[in-house]
Length: 169
Ligand SMILES: [Mg+2]
Image 1: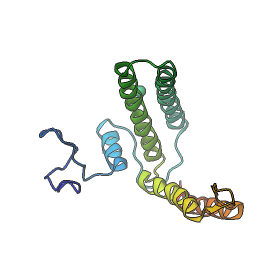
Image 2: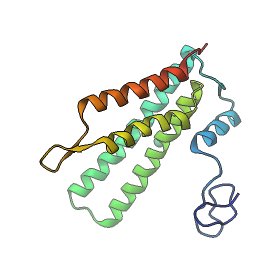
Image 3: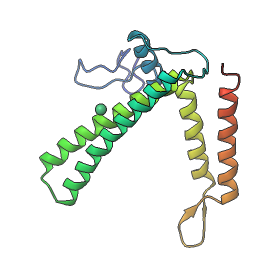
Image 4: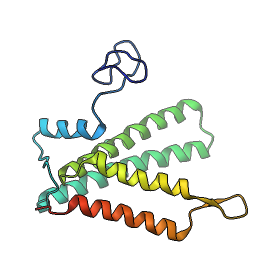
């Protein structure tokens, strides 16, 4: 597999030559494989989770979200106080790490429900992108999405997700 950005041969994110290359796997696939390696359940199709799984996913996501918010709070305060660059860069590093943790547990939560994280993510982004496409100038230069268009797009996403979870056992 060649990195699509630089054509270097790279099956993973690799740092051997000091550069980052793209992995052949999506983030969703990567998290799914990792969950299998650590013995977590990764249903192939949508599946109603047991109570323990549902509570675990809640706990993981809320803990990581709180950690990310704490770091973003520190970053905001230091920017507000005009802290020196060294501190700001440290805060960015820490906030970045915690936000990536949130991604891991969010992808993991979808996997645990038997949902394909890449598919669900695509549906949500398709709605966001369509909103941008359908935005119109309301007359003062600000672009807004007409409420009926917004409602339709929301309903479309809902229908796609309903189809996805249909038949979950
Ligand atoms: Mg964390």
